[in-house]
Length: 357
Image (cartoon, rainbow, N blue to C red):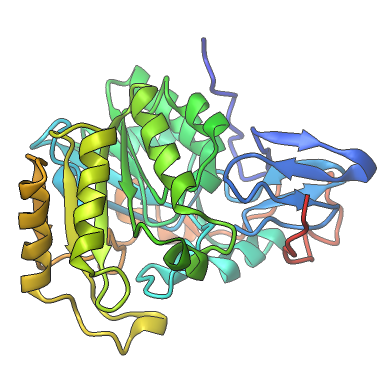
C-alpha cells in the first residue's frame, strides 16, 4: 500500500502526517517524543511544524539546505550496500540542541525556518521526483536524510523514499532516534537503513541537549527500528569529559550486543570542538581505541574507529544547484506558500513553549 501523497509542484505547507487534533484548536504532534501540544500560530520545539487554525503543517517539506554525494561508508554505514554511492540531503530543524553541533545553521535552522514562515525564504524547493532524478544523474545508488534531524521531516522522507524505491534506490535515515513508534512504523516499509546515535547511557547527558529525553526512550526506538526490519547501525561521538568514561562506553557496546546482535556495527567517532564546546579538546586516539578494544572484549565483532571524523557535516559541500541542474537564480527564488489559507500575516509567530500534557 502506498504511503506517499501527491507532492506539491511548488512550495507550500504540507499537513503533518502524525497529528492529533484536540480541543480548542490545539494539536499534538506525534513525529518525535517531544509530542508537542500546540495552539494556533505555535511551532513545535523543532520549529518545523506549525498549527494553523487547528491543523498542524510542516514548513520544511521539500526544502533542502545541503546536498552531497559520497560513499555510504561516510554516513557511517558499513554493512549495507558497501562500496555504493549515496546522495546526502538535509533540510532545517532538529528536536535536540547539542552543545557541540557542527551543523548549527542547518540542523537547528531557526533563521531559515523563520524565513519560510514569513514567506521570505530563498532556500531550494525540490519535489521527491526531482530529488530522485538528481540522485540518478549523480550516479548515486541511494539517498541519505542527514545534516538536520529527519524525524521532523517525515512527510518528505516518506514521499522521497517511495519514489526512490520505485527507481531502485535505497534510503538511509541518520537520526538521534528521539522518535515515536508511530513514525517508525510508517517508515519501516520504505526506509532501508537507520544510522542512529547512542550519545550516552546517562539521562543527565541527554537532558542537557533535550530536557524531556531519557536514554531508555532512545534505546527503545533504535531497538524498535531493528524489530521492524530496518537495517540498523549505531555510532557514538566520544566527547572528553562528557561521555568518555570507559565503563560507560563498554556498557554501550554491551547494549548493542544484547539488543541488536553481536555482529551489529558500532561506529566510534572523534569529537572536534564546536559551538558551546569550543573549549573542549578533540578526543584522543587512546580513548577511541580503548573503547574499540573494550567493545571487542565484550563480543562485538564489527567495531569501527574514526580518528579523523566526528559528524556527518555539511561544511564543504558543493552548492545545491550543481546537483539540481538549474541556475542559482531559479533555485533561490523567494518561497511563499502556494496555498491561500494563511493570509498576508504569514504563518507563525509564536515560538514553542513546553506545556505539560
